[in-house]
Length: 454
Image (cartoon, rainbow, N blue to C red; front, side):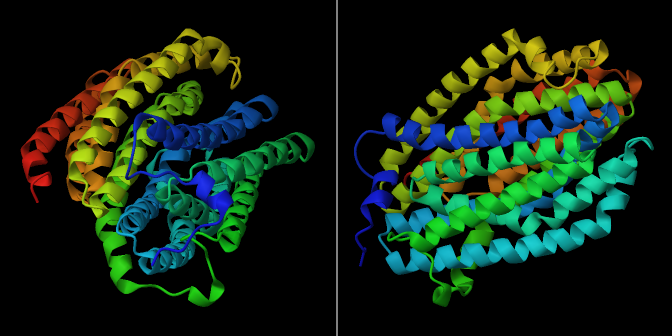
């Protein structure tokens, strides 16, 4: 039987099963998008602080690690998406006991996964950076940054899993509140370690780990004090094998998709590294800006996953069709508006990271390539989110592997060497998105009838 939630918890939860959708999609997605944007701004502060108060080499060391870190964490972040879908479905089915078991299972999986990634990452950190052709002037700082970051993986993954638990109930504001507190801590520690203590990339890595420990602890305290379905009790900590299996069936394909995606980005990063430190720094600065509108479209994709998951659990398939249409429209409108603003203000924004003219030129070039093609990427995010809400996670993963990753690896190995310039390398981003968007639309068209008649 459903327990009546505490009033403060109830106010933050969203009724996804009844009533209008646009306002609820916005209520869910905008705090989630703001969470991603703030998280990236705090990550960008890492790059900006070392760029302004240390050196371009330290800046390049931080930037060159982004795809490596993504490779190691994306598998387990994918499982957190599986946890979101499972908890959402149990909520839609009004099974309070299953919700509780899934919540406690998720937290244990986060901690165990974090320890595994930390241990595995320490072993392969040096070989990975060597394989990526990180220049000798950057290598020691890049290695120090990566090792410190990986040591903090248990708390980093815990924050992501706890956030997924809150999102499954429609509460995207509590993770946002905790992130703001942790982010302010991160920026303060960045300045202290780098400017006051004279540290470089290792200083911002240490600040990142400490701030993630703060955010994950705060979310855990909220779970302990909750009177709703997601309340955590120490005596209930155990892994439910059946629910874990469901999470893995949904989450592992999503995680493998993220891993292969990161692997293709590592291939591209290796090519960027071959073009010199200025290109590396400009590309790093651009990445920290271009990812902001990505978080907007990703938020609507996650909204589509969560709303679809609850409504499928409740047997409301026709409502899922409306969720897809409205999520797609909102994602296009909001992400395109942010892309336009960034393009107009790209030079002042890039100067926050570095003032060297060559770095600014390369950063501007990358921004134009990426942002003008982002509306195509919206299709991938929202349709993937819809399919995952139906617990069909394998198809989006395979489409990403072959459409995006396959195209990029082929491009880097076969096309780029014939004309090894930065624009030629960047052209693969919009090309891979167009190919994948066409494939996922064709796939959805083929299975739509089955989805709504099962």
